Image (tube, rainbow, N blue to C red; front, side):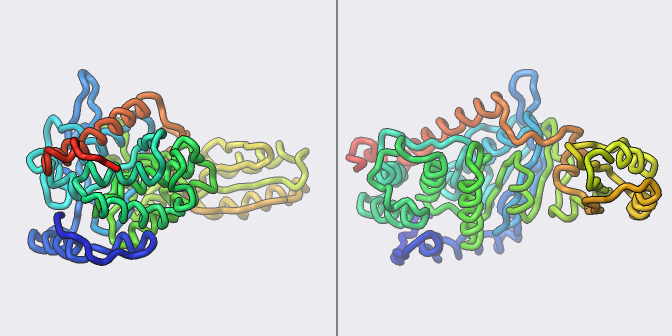
Amino acid sequence: MSAECRHPGRGLSAFSAECPRVRRRCSYQRRERGVTDVITTEGLVKRFGTTTALGGVDLQVPAGAIVGLLGPNGAGKTTLVRVLSTLIRPDSGRAWVGGHDVVSHAHQVRQMIGLTGQYASVDESLTGVENLILIGRLLGLPRATARERAAVLLDGFRLADAANRPARTYSGGMRRRLDLAASLVGRPQIMFLDEPTTGLDPRSRNEMWNLIRELVADGATVLLTTQYLEEADQLADRIVVMDHGHVIAAGTPLELKERVGTRTLAVRPLHATDLASVVEAVTAVVSAPPQVQQTLVTAPVTDPAALPAVVRRLDQAGVAIGELSLHGSTLDEVFLALTGTPATGSPDPTTATATATATATATATATATAADRDPSTMSRSLA
């Protein structure tokens, strides 16, 4: 992607759209090869000693979509992202990103992608603008171009007012936005986001969701790993569920919910003293033991007739109902049904270590890419 942009815009959308020639070239390449998926894997295997992290993964990510990778800790999500972003090589199987093999054409893949890990990889001693200029210079951009792109991104990510402050003074949400901005300096068509909202408060998480939606609206393709099921439900066009290194289900959020095939009956008594009577009534009409959370009684049901049956029993017992509903499966229930593990929403130490390694390797990859392009780059001023 060597075509230079001559259309400096304003804001994130303008920045993402300022290289139409590059976008047309990528689209043409997909049409020429008859490919509609920008990411494809076939039988991907990766082992670490005696541990099989990926046990033959087949994956397709269509262009212009957000695909969410879900799975419990140790499912292989981060390992898959590391393989696709050329940070590690698979032991067997093949993977293509943007039509390029991740092993034999790793350099071309790196020119097309952006990567944001679970933890911010920015240099905390540098200011926001210095961080982005540094990335631009490592990518071989002229100094003036690097400064221009940094300014556009900082404005688009609502960081312009903090541009000259050291990154160590940023809040968690600001650091994550700066990290995502850094991954966009090279105008990637394909983004790998490995649990990008880990550790963020709800407001910062919503801000990050909006930024991800903007990326896709501007033509990018996003592969997102997350343990927040609400996040996958809100953002993903398709969801891929992994467990023990294998893909065990894939589809739209609605398709996965329908695949589980159960509904959830929820009943809350008007008076807490009637909780035991509600549990008794629900137990009598459902096959699985009900769950009790404070005063809310829930149970999976396959027959919608369970709802009026419970109502009749409670009416006969003289129990006043404060809340009553019968709704389709949630992603939490899908996750539990497919993996046998409830979603925790918190990363485990193994995943965190792997991501920290991936972040360090990503910086080294950017440096190596710059050296491939211009060996003298590292000896020049980055400011």
